[in-house]
Amino acid sequence: MDIKEIQSLIKFVAKSGASEVKLEMEDIKITIRTGAAGYYSEPTNYVQQVPMPQNQIVQTAPTAANEAATAAETKANNEKAENDKYVIIKSPIIGTFYRKSAPDKPVFVEVGSTINKGDVLCVIEAMKLFNDIESEISGKIVKVLVDDSSPVEFDQPLFLVDPS
Image (cartoon, rainbow, N blue to C red; front, side, top):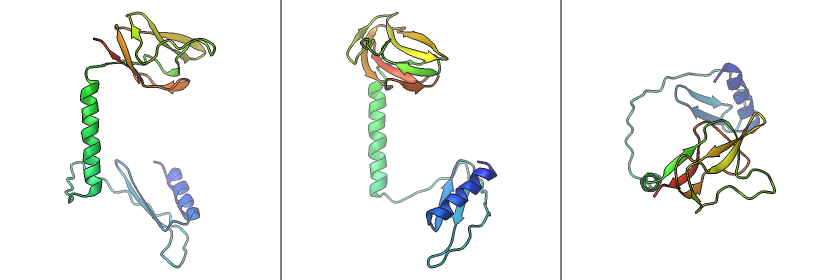
C-alpha cells in the first residue's frame, strides 16, 4: 500500500463520518481517527506502520463465533476429504471460459456427463482465439466450478471429475 492509497483512504474515512477505522494487513497496521464523539477534527496524515509478529499465538475463550468457525472448518475438511477422490481439471491458460462453442449450440458437458480422454469440455478465449480444452482423463463430471462467460486464471479449477 503506497502513500497515495493511504491518503485516499484517509479522505474516504473522513467523508464517511466514521470516527475510527482500523486496517490490518500482513505487514502493516493502520488506524485512522477522524475525531472523537461530539466534535469533528480534520484527519491527520499520520500513519503508523507496525510490523506484525509472525508467530504470535492468541488464546481466546470459546465463543459462539469460535464454535461457528470450528464447525465451518470441520465442514471444509469433510468436503476436502470427499473431493480428494475426484480429479480437478484446471485451466491451462488465462482467458474467458465458455461452456459452449456458440450461443446457439448446446453446452459441451453437464454435471453427470460421462467423458472420455480427448473430449472437449469447454472453450477458453484468449486474445480473440478460441481454445478447445480437452479432457486428459475419462470419467464423470461431478461439478462445473466456473460460470459461463467468466474470466479464468491459469491453473484455476474448472471441473471436478470422478475417474471411477
